[in-house]
Amino acid sequence: SSGINAEYGDPTYNPDHLVALQKTLKFIQLILPGLGIILANILLLCAAQRYSRRTNTATRKANLTVMLISSVFIGCWLPTFVEEIWRTVPGAGALPTWFDTAHIYLFFLNVVLNPVIYCLTNRSFAGFIRGRVCRV
Image (tube, rainbow, N blue to C red; front, side, top):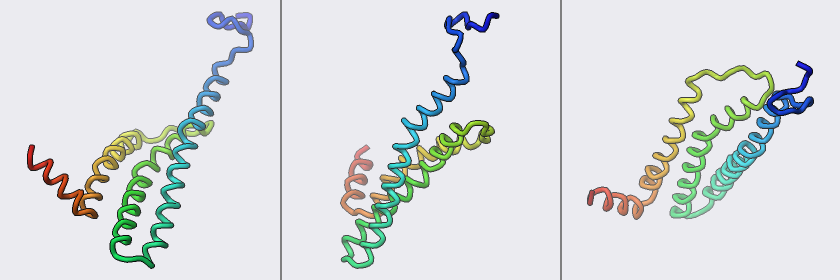
């Protein structure tokens, strides 16, 4: 008990510093790119809304698809990024257990909704999927 951690042999070793470093690295590795993706989707959504007001029907339909896909992505992934940011805040309390379960289901919902949106907005994609499903 001389202040030296027997396991690491370093008198300056402090596990709290490692936890802080891990949280910082997690923030940099996961949160920043994720927020960049969400921001890019928001900008894409805004541009599609502006552009769809002054274009033909086919382009409007394509813009609608982009807007729906982007909105679903943002809605399904934003809670995960909120949770990860919350966990990096020093002294932040624990999130409710239902939050973990909810964002896992949102992952799956995002995966399921993308083909549904494409089928609703694109006849050729819907026909392709219908042809594949009917064969099974």
